[in-house]
Length: 82
Length: 184
Image (cartoon, rainbow over all chains, first blue to last red):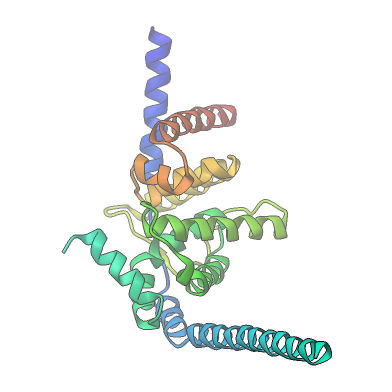
């Protein structure tokens, strides 16, 4: 029982030590400000939009190409039958 | 307006508007920086990795969906993965150094200069012991004592139940007690 109490006391001491010694760090103001500027000035969103438009155009082109191919093949097939 | 609802609206705006993302950044940068600083032990590396966290978040925020977890949990996950990569790349233990910090530890009030030096040595010793712990135990202590999160919040970030966090915390204290008693 006494040992258990001693162990609990030791854990409590360690906890107090952690509470007292682990403190938040205040980052450098210049770093915080410049990173925010870089993020807000970033062109990530525009690049993603351009990529999305490109992918959509390619997909659309493929679909239209496939459509033309199938229609053309159908016409040729009909011509041969006739 | 409910704070959580306001943040969800900010996140939706941040998916298209970099200025809105800047607001999100301001809310969480200190916490993410602290987390990374204590995991890496280097202020310079903490700045570098913090930048990477937020650029990565910006690149992927369009795919972010609210699943009942706080937005910070997503950011911490990105930070956790980048820190894991950092350690894997360096593949050596870093000594925690409190020298040459561009930032500053929030000062303890009323410390005599001699006591301040002793305090700093004690902090170094404690941090060295913490650095010997498994990564998940280090993470737990940083989130609890530096970022001052509750067990429930820590559980959401570490994807464990609150009970599992309490149990892990207890085991972590026991391990620290053992290593500290070996030093004596």
